[in-house]
Amino acid sequence: MFMNQEDIDEVWALPVCCNIKNSIIESFKLSDKYKDRIFNISYKDDITLKFSDIVDSNEFNLKLFDNKIDFEGQIPLVLYSDNLDFLLEAESSIVFELKAIEQSDVYFDSRFKELGECKSYKSYYEFSSYLNYSSDVLLVRVYFKDDSLIIDADLDNIPFIKQIISDNFCIAKDRIIINPINNDCVNFLFPVCFNAVLQGIIIAKKLGRKVNIIYYKRHFLMAESLSLKFSVANYLSEANRIDKIILEIEINRPLNFLYKFYFDYLRNVFSNLFFDVYIHINFISAKSNAIFFFDNHFLFEMAIYNVVYSNFYNLAVNLSIEPLSYLLSYVKSECNVFLRLFKEIDLKNFIMRKSSSISLNNKYNVFDVRRKGVGFAFLNLDPNLDFVSLSRNQTVSMSLHKDKLDIFVPYKLIDVNLKNYLRNSLARTFSLSYDNVNFIVSDAFRDNVELHSTLVKESYVIEREVLAIKDGLLMMLGEDFNGEYPVVIGQDFVVDIDKKFNVACSLEIDIEINSFDVTFSNVNFFVENGKFDKLRINNKRVFSIFSLAVDYILGNITYDIVNSVELEFIEDGEFVFSFRILFIVSVSAIKTALIQAFDLNICKTPIDVKEILNSWSVRIDTN
Image 1 (cartoon, helix red, strand yellow):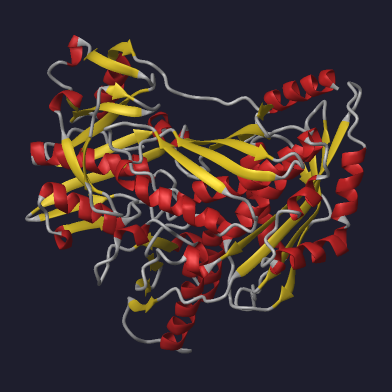
Image 2 (image 1 turned 135 degrees about the vertical axis):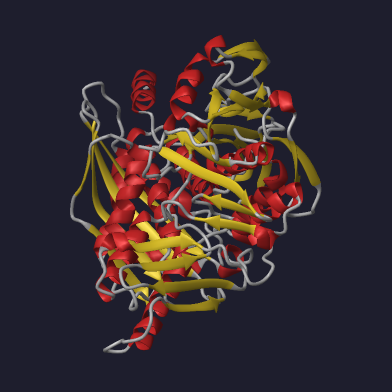
């Protein structure tokens, strides 16, 4: 796949993972036969870099390599050589001498406890990161040329990266040049790629040569095994009303310089909820001095809404209450839009009546072959919350060549369907092949950008600007363009949406117990303030987003969607199409339907079928 000949100007670098967390590496050994051909940088070199907290500018000194293994996939050393084959052989010969240290994971039982005048109900949830990458290999190339640092890599958060490199290696930000390799604008491996860049810079400075750092899928574990754990303690009055909720959120990765950003983000999301409940948050991050750059706020937001809706459903089924009515009883009085959208859905699909019927007929029997559930969730996209962190001056541009079109965007897209949609549209418009339309994260920032603004991303903003620039480029070309290529057009834009985008989702689920075949029906999205005339939106695209949400929850489980997926509009509004919001509301609605179907807490996302069926069997025995 890669050039493997020896070149005096280039070296290959390969990471070595240690997946035994809660341990300390006392030493490592490499076979003697590689002694003169394989070299390394490791925790023994004590490479420390400086990071600044983006909220209050406090400084953190973090280690590029650490012999204390706090999370799976941690990389304590990188091998390098002029021959890739030797590296691959040597990697498998590495032997670590490990010493175990105490594990600190805490799990909570899901059960009622009497606490004075209050009952306490505790539940537990876990979410694995939503991953979507198209390649099993990641390549980063780093080298110095004159007084510039050249980085060839598919990166995101470029202002942040330049600032960190500039602070630690005394290189002016305008002398750091970042070029894409694969033009892959949908990538959830940023933490891996970021560490690879730093490792490459260290080796390139040490040797004065071009460094190719290569990661294979086995090296992605630091991103793949990432999870969020939620422990929820509900304190109930005698009337089974929630007095308060104590919520503990734990992420199994070190956030360090990003901890305060995510804590503030969590509090902002909870302050925007539609339910009249007091919530106290304890936020716990894995403690480590190893460098890890977590940039997936999408996982946090998705998990929060999922926990909120799942928590109401779990309480209801444990209290033998119909879950939808219990949920609605907590809606804030000023959230009339919530109730209005719910009424529209209920008038069409009779979800209250169906949900009540399921709750009244949930007698468990070992011979039951099917379970049913009704799911519901409501979200809004609030500009005061979602866009407060976004930079007010971002840029999208296009460069049209005779045989290709490059689109430069400020950050990666989380929606692979959106990328495919735009590539098809642009290819047809400019008579190009699909493969010759490239999305590239731009390396050009005209103004100083507040670093926290690079972490919150919304794909539909990019979509709006790309479609607008496409029209501008068509006007420049006219009918018979005879000018010179490339033709370049670009524009700055601000996030100026001043209306809330509201969406509700309802669905029904039917599960065959023996085979765990799942059937979804009557899947409906109701939207307020979401006019889609510029997109010519249809149900096909919404169907694709819902299917992604199902895949995320069910994994490889067989499922079917009958009666299609419908999108209806309560009233027209601004041009908005948020993959993020539609995906999150889908995930939340699916999980609530599963909880009602089995009448128990569905702890993990993606789900664990064996755990669900075992818990359901216990439920049968209990009843």
